[in-house]
Length: 280
Length: 280
Image (cartoon, rainbow over all chains, first blue to last red; front, top):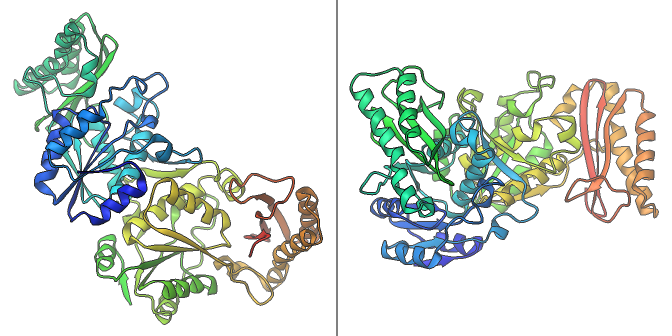
C-alpha cells in the first residue's frame, strides 16, 4: 500500500494505477461504514485509493475540528487489510495555502438541513472533494448514504460541472442495535450511546407509520419529534421529510422522500436518515 | 475536423485524440488573436480542440450577450484552415439546464478591474471554463494576454483546485496600428475605430514614462487618463496600475506591474493592457 503525503506524490502514484480507479474520501477514524465503501470499490475497480484528511473548511468556527477524532496508525492498518492500493494523507497547509481563494458552491440544495444548520459546511465539502477528485482522478467515488445531503450535493456538483467520474452512494452501515456508524459516536458516554438509539427508533417509527398508510408528512414528523423529545438528553436540530431531489419539505409523502434528522445527544451532534419507499 | 454539438459527442471525440491535447476556448467571431492561440496549440500539441460558445453567464443583464457578433460558418472555415482536430459548439440549454446551480468563485483577484465593473462576470467565466476543461480534458489550455485578469483568474482556479492542465497565456495580437484584436471591434464605426487607438497610445505613454525613469504609478495613471480624456468619444471605465499577482493598485511601479484599462468608445467597451518591465 502506497502512502502519498503530498499532492505531487499522489498524482505520480495515480499515473501508475490500473483503471478503473475507485476512490473513497474520508476524514479518517475509520469504521465499518468507511470500510464497506473500500470493499465495494475493491470489488468494482482495478485500483482503490482512499484519502484521510480532516478538512478544516467544512467545520464551522464553533464546531469540532480541533477535537475531531484521529488515529492514523489504526486507519492505515485497516486500509492495508482491505487491500487499498494507495492512501492520500495531505497536509492542510498544502491543500489550503495562504493564497488559496477558489471555492465551489452548489446552490439550492445546500440551503436546507445540514446547510441551514452549518453555514459554509457544503462550500468546504464541495471544494475539498473537487480538489481530491482532481488529484486522484477516480473512475468512481464512493460516499455513504448516512450523509444523504452530502451525497446529493456531490452528485449535483459532478453533474453540473461535467466532471468525469461516477458517484456511488452506498447503504448506511449500522451497529447491531441500529445506530448509524459515525466517527463521532466515539464522543458518546455509555448512557448517551443508549440515548442515541432514539434517532434510529424515530426513523423506524416513520417507516412504520408510512407502511401503515400514513402519508401526511406533518403528522409523521410530529410523531418522530415527540418520540425524540421523550429522550431527555436529546435536543433536536431538525427533523425533516423532504423531496429527495430538491430537499424541499413535503406536506405529503411520495415514495422517494428523504426522512432525515440532526439531533444533539449531550454535546454530540448526530445525523441519520432513511428514504421512504426505498432502501436505507 | 470533427464538430461536436453535444457534451457526449465531445467527450467521445476527446477519447480518441492523441495526447497531448491543446484547447482554445472561444466565444467565436474569431480573429487573429484566437487563430494565433490555435497555431501555438498546433505547434505544441498532438491534438487541438477549439470551442465556440457565447457563454451567457459571463454577461451582465445590461451587457451585449444578445448582440455579441456570431459567424459560425466563417469560424469553422478558419479553424479548419488551422488544422484544428475538433470543435466543440454546445447549446446553452445543455451547458446550463434549468437545474444547474453549481458555481466556481475565485475570490480576491476578481474584486478589481473587470470584476468591479462587471459583477458576476468572472463567476460565469470560471464556471464555464471549468466545465469546458472537464469536457475536453486538455493537457494545455490557451488564453490571450488581452484578457489579462481572466488569464490570472483561470491560472489561480487551476492551481487552487489542483486541475490537471497547464494554462498558457499568449501575447496580445494587434492590428498594424496597435489596436488589440477583439471580436467587439466590429461594433466600432470608422470614426470610433480611429478614436479606439487612444487605448494603445495611452499604454505606449505609460511604457515611455516608465522607461524614462518615472516610477510613481499615480503620476503615470494621471497622464494616461489625461490622454484618454482628450479623445471626445472615449469614456474611461478604469485605468489601473496594479500588482500582477494580487491586482491591488500600486503607488510605486515595480518591474512586473499590470497596466490595464477599460474604455468605452461610443457604446463599445474595450479593454487592453501591457505588463511594464515585461512583454505585452
